Length: 261
Image (tube, rainbow, N blue to C red; front, top):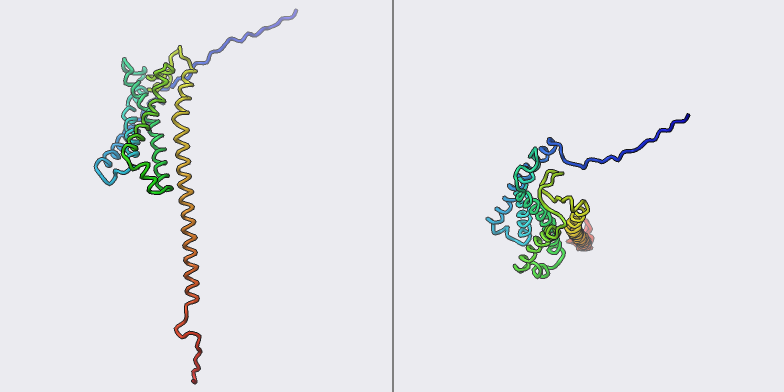
């Protein structure tokens, strides 16, 4: 008599990832506290120094102050994420308006920082590689600088806010990562979160990175070319100097004197 055994595999459901280790969350919160303290102090000092000194109020430092303001705002809202990570039972408050605001500000200021770094690199590139007239034409008028600064804020804010206003994603307390970031409802699903993350990744990172790389590469090539020209001119000058010294007449000319003479 033959016996057959049939094995049936029961479907296994994997538990979704959750940043649940309270010790790890406290460790990350401790790091963010250090970032908060150093960021508020350092960026506040930059803004204060430019505000006090008229000598520091130039075009480049306008972008530097803009960068400092963006970083200062991001640091100012870090306590929301610190509280979210530190709360043993999740977000410690009944409403997550503060957490939503923190997520919005941090996302926007990250984009502002990236585009401002690109603006600084482009400014340095034009100043070094172009003529003074071209530089003054671009950066010499106040309304141009104001327009550039507004653009540095409007573009990242649009990339962050428009998808949220269209219902593509939500900002607030994320129960998976216990932080103030983007959070997706069950009805929206993971695809909406991926689309939103893709919009931010494509809109905030590639263009500033390309501007940074191209600008500093052009600066490097320009400085290298001028260094080579300077070295060639110096070598030519030394060669001409040596030639002039070799053809210089002696005090007695070509006469030879006889000691008995």
